[in-house]
Image (cartoon, rainbow, N blue to C red):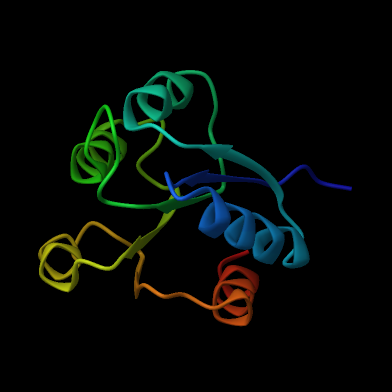
Length: 118
């Protein structure tokens, strides 16, 4: 079986758990990170297949993380799903995201989208 990692960068623990369960149902192994600065460090170590990215994070903002991903040749092809309640900010980053979901995001919505990405 192929190891398919989904990285969830979300500071709301309950929502991160829902995202994790949805991605596991779509066949991914998941890892949750709740701080932007921790996510930046971890992205130097791993190459996930999919990232679910909140935009408002402690430490480093999600928009900075997204620019980092798209500017790094090693990470540039990773599928990034932006999940945010901030519609204006999400829309401004839409060109760099593979998908943009406005919160609240349902379990089935994320699971089905992840299945199509993989």
